Image 1 (cartoon, rainbow, N blue to C red):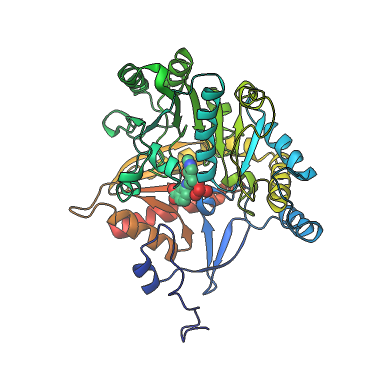
Image 2: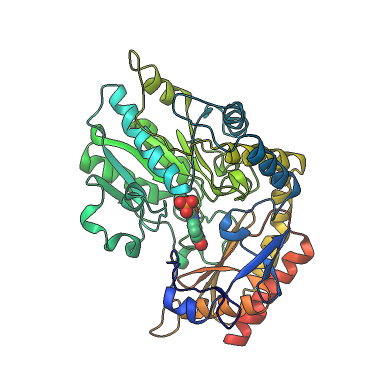
Length: 441
Ligand code: PXG
């Protein structure tokens, strides 16, 4: 039933990560999307500066993906994935494996980033157990890490509001590395900041404290997206890799945001030249057209588990919708589109213009940092006295009113447009942000 204002009844839907009461008093509803633009229910065109929620990397409603999903929905809507299969699931796994770093060619499908993270953590535990090191149960995350909302993900994650309500029920054996954000040392860095490699040595301290024989895995986002675009200092990930390798600890890169072209390569791992043992992914894997996620696993990790039992099920884990036919069809069409249009290379080639446009806001009032890598930028604002986050929240709302979608977290505005963005749209995007920031100064 439509309310008098033409909107549906908003009361029943409990919205995720949203101030529900506030939203419903001032709703922002989207009606359709094509290419670089959303159209709001009141008919306004909105430039998508965030690829939806970092996921629509090839732009919206791409014909090839729409057709693939439509065809598959009519052909076979669903096939059980336990003890049965369907060809597209295997084809999609091969296509994903083809984009992963050398050696990470065993693929487990999920439906979301949260599921991918929890799956990766479980694979790490299963791997050690299969090798007779079942005492390795400790997981190491990082402050300001976001790994979704499963109990595993919030336990290794480092965002206190996501944890505190559930604090009595988090995984028991978890520790955290310090985050790498440091404005004093690294403000206005372009690409990877110069300072901070030694923060990886904190892992040595944690390993010594707990003893390496108790630690299963370290999980980090190569670039932390949700908590404000935190870019790894030069040498930092390399050092994490060296320390984990030294102690037989698995390294998991959570590439839910960085996967599929965001930095200018298929993975951050490829772009930054550091290869983990597992990669969790979602979002761009299907261009968000159908919910999908996956974990790419090094072959010897997979083999230790799958060849480690005499017979029967090797890994007691999976989802009703792992490799759902519509997801598999969307993944295949999406990966094909990325390849055909060279979108990862395109992102890499656009990155310098994107960087220049982002850093042109340096002198704008209240901008205390601009950081960027690939087609991602974070613009950090000075918090208002006694009201952290308020300035960025206002900027978000004003941008939306001015036909631009951005994200904000704390007082950082995050920009991560579809990889099909044109240079003129990059200019427009940052000009709009600049104008809004001057207006609300
Ligand atoms: N890991 C990472 C690194 C993520 O960024 C997840 C896991 C969880 O994925 P699902 O599909 O379960 O939501 C994410 C999700 C934002 C924002 O505005 C970021 C995410 C989701 C929604 C908003 O920064 N990242």
